[in-house]
Length: 334
Length: 173
Image 1 (spheres, rainbow over the protein chains, first blue to last red):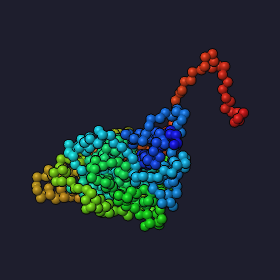
Image 2 (image 1 turned 180 degrees about the horizontal axis):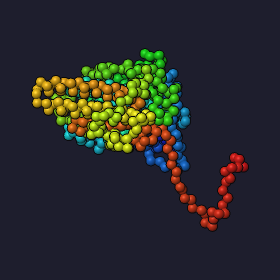
Image 3 (image 1 turned 60 degrees about the horizontal axis):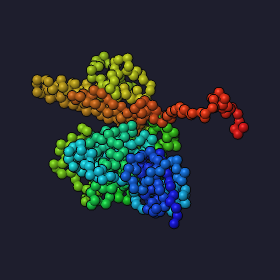
Image 4 (image 1 turned 30 degrees about the vertical axis):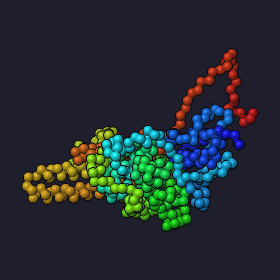
């Protein structure tokens, strides 16, 4: 029997990246039970709360191996049939000479019993335990190419006005234009709040962002459900095999346009922002901008997104708001 | 087509109009910008300042039309009132279309101009820019910080007796 090895894994990238690391830690322990004591140092401690695979370790412990985690796999993801989930796993395999394999198609975020028992943030605010969808209508400024036009998001909200209560979230200093007829939680949620919101959410609609990965990483408040509906407006930046989850409706254009004919373009911005970021350079800019959107995003219509959302209702995965549930919610007045 | 960063037509600053009504000109991020001296200049060359003025002008026009609508609704003669109301509503619609065009023009740059309404009038516009954060710093500007770490000298050692490394000496010397 091999001795137990102590590991501290570090990464200080964005929350979506950290979610992928939660998957790697889970799979490390599942593939090598009792072989490792693991702790982490990351930019998102909130994503590690209640994680059963972590053991508090001190950085000054001489027996600890500190592994600065990366996912160089992304550099070849346009050629190889691999998912984002493989990123850190393959890196750990290389660094530690292991053969970890992904065990679940998603990240690994855990809730406490009190979090499971607590009413949703929506119920706390409205006093009603109603189903809701989370909507993200923007994103970070570094990759504006992922944005869809806010009027298109609004058209989706308007289409489902009597059927779905949308809760808009977004970080304060990112680009999240206000939508009408939604519960406006922009700049009002911590990372942990978002985890709890997702736990009780009936569905999610968003661009390629942290939330789509969280949707696949958080358990369901309703144990009858096996997968949480999620519609992703993706366009052609990322290859779907790298980014998408099987139970999501991932609307993309890879293969349909010359600029993403065989794989994602991985470009960053629609137009230069003038913020001093190297992503303003021509090699990072979209090659085909139409009506202020990357053509790949412009091609995706609100009708398409509504149809994909409707799949889940027609398939019986979701239930529309009942007549008495919508009244008094005062959307937008949060 | 890449959205135009510059105005298609010369910007008509309402503050220069003879009938300008300061009370209908919204604030920007809670600050009065016209006609006080703190206002961004009308010939602002900085893009963000120009954008602020363009949006304020758009909301000023909407406010003016809304003001006219209120006056129209006070007309006693119902026939005249209806006709005037119709005109005002059409004018409001036209102003809203202009505002929407501005929003569309600047959306790819991450610019949000969020109106704050009071009694039907836009009294303030909250701006978010793609290039700078809420503190006014370029988003990608590097942050630097420094700290002082006191290090206790071993007993009997005096600072003036220490020899510090010569920074100008070649490496490994």
